[in-house]
Figure 1 (cartoon, rainbow, N blue to C red):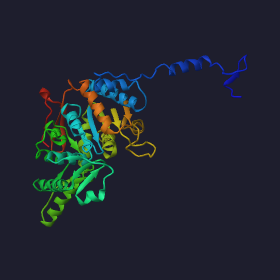
Figure 2: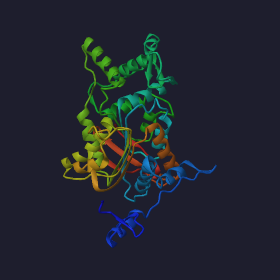
Figure 3: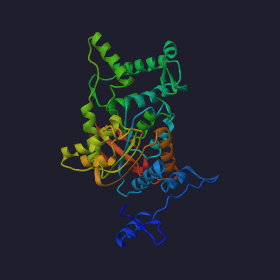
Figure 4: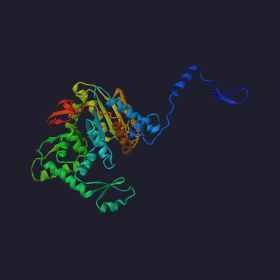
Length: 379
């Protein structure tokens, strides 16, 4: 017979009484009931996300991410917020959500895959993403020069033109090394689209870093530029990825606190994490003070994209006392929910924008912009 069971006077099995210590522990663990979600015709996105914190499974995780965001944007030390972007976010229809977060003052630094910003440039040049199906005949799409991103189509001819546009833009620049931030600013200066992520970053002085720029169609365009320059026996430009490291660590060490928002994972996540590790180069040891991540990457394979933020604490990338949360919810669903929470709660309404002052690749000053304007001087 189990040591937890006994017979009562009627011969039935019952549990043995818990000790007072275990009764207290049980009472503590059962002190917070799950709160059923109550929706009304007037429930806002912000109210929905806030209520999710009382639910379970990934709804609770979304709610906990929102609680971290609230603490972050109400912190009087005004942390520098770094947004890491990976995955098919523009293809998913999140272009304006990301753009509005930047324009609304929620984001201070963007670290992205090249594909996301390239697809933003593609749209800024007047080309589109179109609804398709994952059950498409891909050999037929190939013959039509249509590229498929899961259930989204893009025009291969327009991609080709945009690749070449990037390469010819590089032809016009002074031959030298550029950080990806400097080169993305040059691209933004040639575009005029209020809905563009790249253009909005440039106009609001938000630096853009693309640590894996070569691994994208921007890299293809730059390779076209390189081949043309070699054929014509003239110097060309090059992207200095280590300069990216130096520029980002300068931002970290000049910020009173830092926060990371990871949409999916990939290179941008590790790059933002490594930026605080590199602060030792300036005699500092620090981790991010706030962090959230929304992803569908699994943790069990040991890969970076799905690694937990608590695991990052073992590396010193997330501070021991940091507030953080993760939700395993696909970004086309999770990012609009959290953005709606930020907008609905007006979390950034009184948040002073940052001003970055660059002398070439050196960050000479970082602080609140005078008069509430977010500007970046000298790239």
